[in-house]
Image: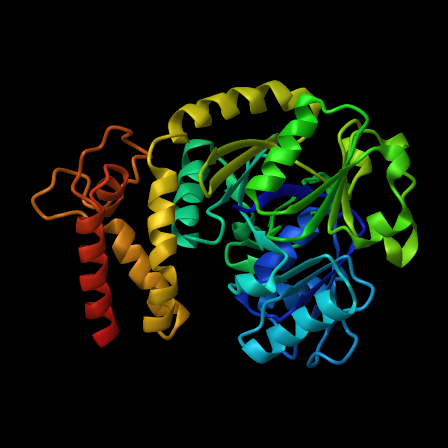
Length: 390
């Protein structure tokens, strides 16, 4: 499982290496969260070039050079070249000790994964399948866009096909940057005087994510403990003196003053590796967030989504190996998820029980959630063999 975190990017330096469509999405999300964004790429999309032209971002129109990642809080590699992406991760995380580094679609070279996000201006929802099924995450995001009258961060930046300015925090957005941290075997420090329910919740989440958890009393904490930790969770701001400058590269959460940290943990709905987080934009909409959280928990918990995502994740490496291009892989997953047997009742494509919770169609989703795994495996294998021959 990945650890959900809403990061405060306000005025923090963010680097995107790459200028294509995927890089553009990263730029937009970072800007909405108040990030100070730089792009390095010989070429760029129309929107990225436009944002650079009007001064919203910096664009270095060239290839990556040595030490380009130094001094950034967050780095994302989104080029089409594996060797460049790997070089970004190696330099940023391993050499420059930057905690938050993402290489698009390469989980082993990430310390965090991006979330599918929607917002209606008052509430924000992020969806993660812990890297196991981006296609399912997208389907659920699209469902929320429709039912909650919400907007995906991926659709911002254009009006009538033309690029437009991206509103930053100072112009009324002020949204956090939702990500999912990859904490397997990473050192995470939890500092507290008393083990409250919130502290227990954080420790439980860290353990579920495979983190190496160290718990300490405030008077036991030394600078070396902070410097060696990937993230730090503290019950009160006053408990620990945080180092300044480069040594403050770790990310931290204060339970008593979330705004004082670099991230906070939102309210969660968890079903195995399927996670939905819900947060309010400000204190006046907290009650709406709580109502929505309760509604979504009733819909998504223990309703087969975790099992479905686990099934797709188990087959994902084989599918990535068999289908050479991202388009072919995307088309395959869409066909896999959409499938319904011809003699099955409506709908014509699988609704993932989003529109009809009690849908009984003969589809991959229902086979998996009702335990018909042999049937689901056989269908997946046959479809993959057919697709790989084309």
